[in-house]
Length: 476
Image (cartoon, rainbow, N blue to C red):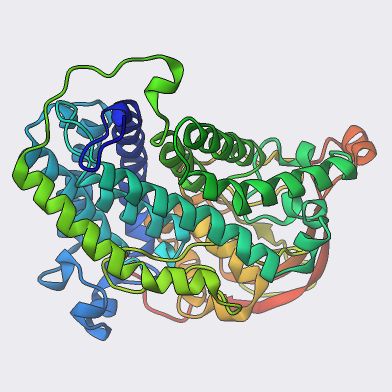
């Protein structure tokens, strides 16, 4: 039975939350380590030192505001990865409440510090969600104590904002969500298709209508059932988790679907399945006091996302404070009907002519070679691949980093080339690079049988004319 201060049957959800979120935090920290040199280091595409000089500390609070170096960044990320690994294995849950709280607070502070200097590379909703989920994790308590009812309600409110925000932005956005035709395009035009996306795209159109309608029910109706007593809450949470699993199969959206599954399963009541709670002690009075105080703060901060949910001018993803607590979330308020891709090419010819041979770079996770099947990437996040998808949508998304990307390719920057799946110039950088724009579409079943290709593409035009190296070599 649920009491005001504690909720014993939430022990299973708490265990899922700790292990699941710990694992996803490990992925997040490791992806930061692997992509740091090319994207954010002192010689990266968007260097952190320059950003810190142009940004006030309280606008984007971060450990790096006090002191920054590339070595400090990597130290922060490795410490975070280590703590996340301990949490994923369950070791953190065995600690006393104060030590458990300290570990979660450290993970939150470390990853928030990275996100707040991550600029475009960290401007995605799943970065915001994982920060807020980790903040809530500070107060879940170790496995030896009874979970707090107030923390359970913080998780319910977070999941409602994720699901309801996504559902409302769809209804208020693209008309294809209202006439149930969005999935005729979405599997093909989504930022990073997965191995099964071709098959999802070719499902019968009536099934696409059913998918879209079911999505509306899960995002617009089911979230309210999370506030109902058990067992209704558990079945609502399982419905959300099942829908998110479907999204995992149909595309690569970093860890957002996995994280939403973890949040949903954290609300499962073990007693619904006839499983008794293990022996636990009451939370420490000091810990209870902290949770009550934090719940009061969350209640006050909830005014802004609640107002956004009710607004006809709803913002899709919005942060209201630099600590990323109680943000607004949403996804795919509009759907592209055509898939555009920027393709970067280089040539070794020092003198350009009509016979110059241009060779293509290919980036991880991004469509390039039409015969290459889209890969499984999630829950890992390929930040450069995602931004290259945005770069094809509008020149505004290329400001500040795209020209540097081309320059780094002309320099043969080793850090950047490690993020390139196919480097057509292994023996040295090209003399010129250029950027062309293509329309990509999935092949039909007949085309696939005939050619073996997953994609068909048509040249649209040129984004950047050929350019050669004019800058001094980049030190790495």
